[in-house]
Amino acid sequence: MAKFEHDIKIDAPMDKVWAVLTNPGTWGLWFPNADTISGLARVEAGATFQYQQKGDSASARIVEVDSNRGLIKVVTSDDGKDVTHTFDLDRAGGFLGRGGDDTKVSYIREYQVPGGVLGEFVVGNNFFDETAVRRVLERLKKAVQG
Image 1 (tube, rainbow, N blue to C red):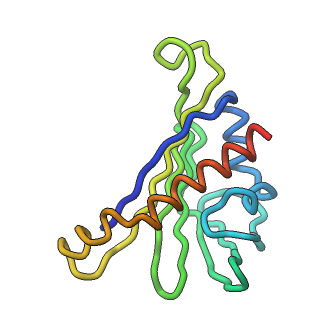
Image 2 (image 1 turned 90 degrees about the vertical axis):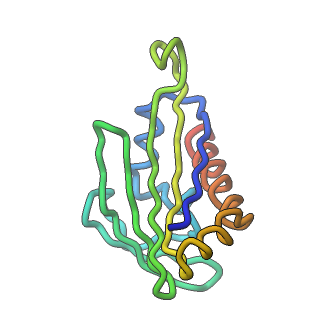
């Protein structure tokens, strides 16, 4: 499995970041590979939606939402390729995460790679996916901080 992970510190309380992540109206601002989102009424496990990028449409489903952990997991399906997107929040400010107003957001993008271990090795340093993961977090940060 190819796995790309990055995290970012957002200058906002965890509740504010969570509010953006769970507001369907903001998903078009930050969701991976999406110019627009349609059909997403609520951010909850089992919800499905469509997203569009550069005129192409694809589907997605939310497979996990855990407000206690600050975790959302979404699987997108594009051209028969499923990609899992995991967003995980953690308090980042203050001493040992206490007393601060910053939030650390981790984003993991995973998908099956043909060719087993060799395929994973080749894809492991994929500049496109590394850049896409960072770009999603920057867009989320902008959506939260304004």
